Image (cartoon, rainbow, N blue to C red; front, side, top):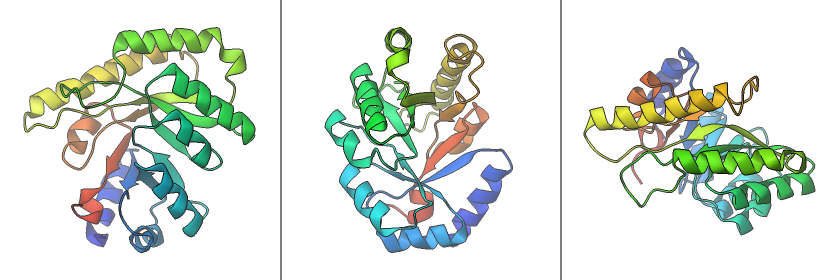
Length: 222
């Protein structure tokens, strides 16, 4: 765990009002605790079982973000405590999160994952699919009171072409602004643009990111 990197990054992001999610997947609880002791509270995990085990072992006020691809049958395992689910990519998953939120008497915050990269291996929805999902959501909103859509998440293409990366982030931000003015007009909670990782977070922030997911800068390569 790199204390100097965290302090520098924390200061940089705090000055811009950007939330730092420390991506702690595969890292032991001791390294997470060390970062927690410095003041970090938002941590991101990719695997539900690993998240559940760490949540039981670490301080209760950690805000756990689930940032990996999520299967519907795994939602129940973390529904009682997860702070934010970043990668909702289907209406089926949205309804399951609502179901588990109801069982746990809480509203679970989520982001819709938008597919902005060239790689087909990345999950997510295109603009038309987002529109379709939101129409379904609106049609059933009275039954979906235990899930709250708070913004968008996206991952740029893994490339050295910064112009391309910038364009992809800009496309997500453009879609966000359209939704904020239409489907979520007047909804102040619809405010999160989760985009940017260790290699491209500076570009992401320039293009409107409010939340970055940083792993290797803080914990070293896996």
